[in-house]
Length: 347
Image 1 (cartoon, rainbow, N blue to C red):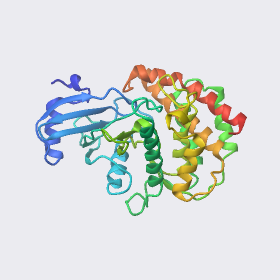
Image 2 (spheres, rainbow, N blue to C red):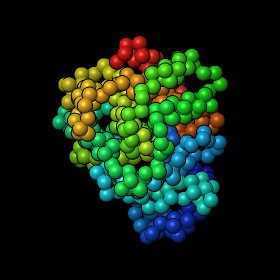
Image 3 (cartoon, one colour):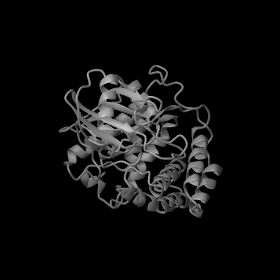
Image 4 (spheres, rainbow, N blue to C red):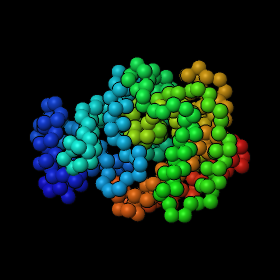
């Protein structure tokens, strides 16, 4: 099998030989199949005589600073083994110096199960919809309750105001991704800087991309088998994860980024945004959530900045899925408009 056939920047034989040496028990690499979904890091299913695995690699080409941190994904998932946050079994990480392709990657055990792409969950019944959303809520609360020192992640993020750091990071990432900044995005950056809440001292392990399609559910039951895609994880403010997921309640249930707006959520067994936030707060023993509009606006801005970077990679020919990347780039103005709506309405 030639290098071009697997798209990993190395031949099939080179990959197989490397894995047999690096992964305990690995033997006889067979088919290598690229997963067609996902934008950030190219991900492959590896079938071998010794079992089935998943390899997740940095993409080729020039990359934005701090992006595509597969080493961080590996580290955090390995640290979470044995906690109340389900994760796949981590097997090996290779940095650029030792990787046969010159691109960092990691290998984990293949996790069978279901990924749901439509948050309305048309594939399952009402009771399972309710259970799936409750499982996501419980897992998010459990994540934010993880003792980062006990799992060896006390140095996984920087000290200080998380939102101030993140606003600086994603503002720079956005401006580096576009030739001409969208005036709405510039206005949102200014509003976020002006409305920045005082640092309340909350620090938790945050996933950074907590949404339905980054969670693998068991093949038959509404139970989480594993939380995936930890590239954006860090130590930060737990409200960032909660607001990021709650954007989905406000996005329309159409197109490539489907949300829950415009559908009868109660009839489907899906909680309202307010109930979901209240359930999370109850699980964590919190009172009323303050500054919710700020957290939502930040979530919309951050996602828009991420998608602007995806579109930039598509233009440079480095996106994992170029057609989808271009569509995501076109979503940036829509997300900016939704953030602007939250600013105007104050909710």
